[in-house]
Image (cartoon, rainbow, N blue to C red; front, side):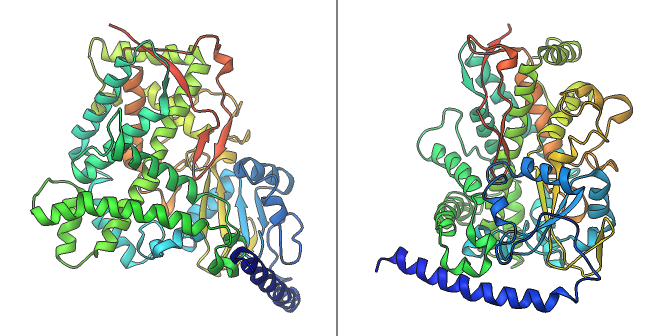
Length: 503
């Protein structure tokens, strides 16, 4: 009997035993829970729950499938894939406010997908640790050191330099078709690595190990989001039937090894100081506040979760502007009026570019990098939409759906940056829960501050003194805005365009 056949037999046996257990448990609890009904939702079948819905309409673009679910059952919906915990879907700004503001203390944990348990990554990750003194201490030592607030001013020259290099790259490609996201991804990775290590980790025309690093990050983010039967049936997790965790762990080992051997170990051996995040972290390592494992986990967290989002958002903005030439012209007019003959855009110029800022916000409304924000209920005293939400329930905030709600946004499907000017010049941390692309509350995205600066900076940089055109034969309406959900929301067809340098 082959290994796969043996695993399949074991799985079938475990599923049968577990199904009997679940049915008996369901019958015992059915009466006692009548006084505390869950929100409405599709009929849950015994044992498999709503799994069929997940391997059908929700498989490739869950943000769209869940939006259709909300149209049927309302802004607060419950469902359950397999034997995993119940999931409650939030699809309106009012329900999002109730979840992320009124119930913030009950939603201080992010649910952990099975892949993230590989090599016990979740055990020390600042992204998965439950809210506690340990989390805030690690957050302050690591992310708080250079990625938020006034600390960002210290690293601004690095971002200016990386944005300038990106501009020079596109100008050098003048007249040739380029893959827009490829260059953006390299720039973002270099910017992150400069803040961390004072070094570029990817060359713009990267080959060899540097190129392997970029591909490794893309592979890890893709593998993190792959459907995994272990998430629907947690009791099958030890078998790792699809090999998802094994595949993810192999990539993790490569990333941990690269970060440790190329950056951490040489810095410890040389004892050099570079006034960067690694210096801050190693000072805590010397005080025994962090372990080597903590360090590699943190560095991996930053690259896996913080690199793709900025590049994706700029690519989405470019796709929308190329599809809407009149909006592109408004951007060009603003840049020319405020920067004139200045050769490159600096971060300090952004205060003069409100339309660029509005373009980014409108892009995030329509195409949030993380369309579904997950949280886990840690208090048994949570109510949402008048329904009791039991402890252990997973909450999904569908930012994609909220951003297209006609009750909050007139002409919600239209790309209209002007809506973010004047009276609705909302802030990312503001009180408008119809626009929360980085989440809210205690588990707000830790990269909010740096993203709010770097994304409009990159967009302005690649539009200043560069005229972008579509490849031959393409009209603006041919720009494909279809999306594809991995860990983050990507264009289904990567954007290709022609930069033309303006002398």
